[in-house]
Length: 169
Image 1 (cartoon, helix red, strand yellow):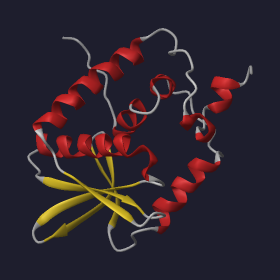
Image 2: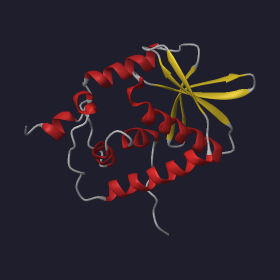
Image 3: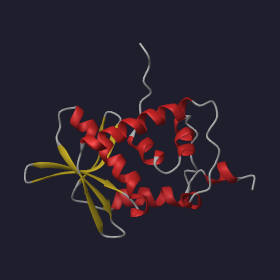
């Protein structure tokens, strides 16, 4: 029997931003924990949406917020900005798919407190197919003996791995 490497929602999030970061995380190379973006993320998680339950762990997923509305389970993912909404949407879709596989029907919402925005996300068959592709590619990237080469993107300036990737410049 072949071992299937676990994939997390965080892996999905970073896959849509930077495959190199996926490799670094899968190889347990920790980012700078004092990085401002990481600290802001922790602060937002601790101080926003106080009425909703916080961080529920179910298997390999950690849901930021969970609530019920008119008998419907709604899970929420809190992000600092909507700049990377595709990554956030796919991460939330991964959570919805994981819950669906466990027999739990839910809807999702992306929450951007600084922008006072909310985006609704629902599981679809098309989304499942895209997730399957992403998961297979994450596993391929993780099996690589060295990380993919750095590629400068707009996220680099905010990335907690930026010194690892660009220290020689």
